[in-house]
Length: 370
Image 1 (cartoon, one colour):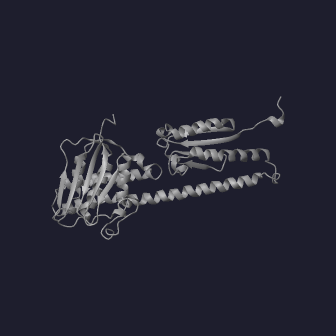
Image 2 (tube, helix red, strand yellow):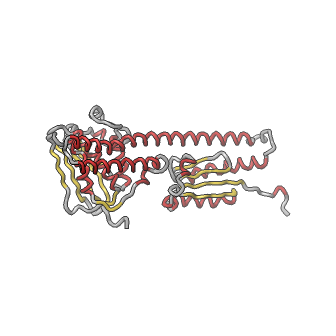
Image 3 (cartoon, helix red, strand yellow):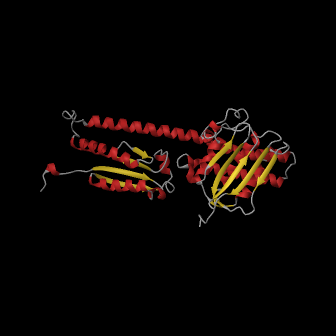
């Protein structure tokens, strides 16, 4: 029989992995799961995997900023690990948890420090808790940053449907559109606001990109609708508005509501910053077998070269346009995120005094949703 000194008691370790199926299929989480499986010789390890789409309450319960995330539920204190380096974080923390567990198990009744060269149970616990508090502080700081960016995005996204509805109301009061057209615009914009409110309930606790619903889409009618909704910005201003849309333009694979949002934003900016008598051009071209390129150009003040990359960042507004523009200056940042989630890219070609031309690409539909 083994002696009492040979009895080995494993430390209990209860983990929760919050991840979507596509995350689990990726190499990072596969490596993490293999690593945790190897640790079952050192810990009495229990791992539960939860899908945040099926259990969204976990996101708020554990204050998750992003997924995938690994949560240590037991032993306390609770810790949350997220990002692309969860396995590396585990490699750093598991030895510490094991050491703390050994000290707790062997020295539960001891009140004094261990011999020279070691650490007391209390010292290990305090050091562990200090590291946890630092980690939670970093998580909360990141969460506050996410919420701040979310508030700026909310302000901008709400402005688009509200502006369209307000322009329709002005046109209706002046008998420029009939009641059927007016109610149609208002109904659709109210639907946009309702959908946006639903998105906001999710975007604070999950990835913003996950809210996209790409499908087969004809882009030309979306562009035409955007122009009509913004007609108050160009009628009676002696502006020339030109469109170039080929009849054989292929369908794209994109989220309809988000594409309309990008087009509304770019066309609205072009109309807003083009002086009376100027010109705005919209073109949709089938550049390659994989991409449709959308271009919106104007004859406005133009954008300095050093600002052309910065304008797609959060909360950026150009000095020469700040006095004219409304909103929080996040419109182009939102456009960039939408385009990039679709797999495309967005860029600008401009020079001071020569106007600006914004381009973005959208993938051609090739049966992706089949």
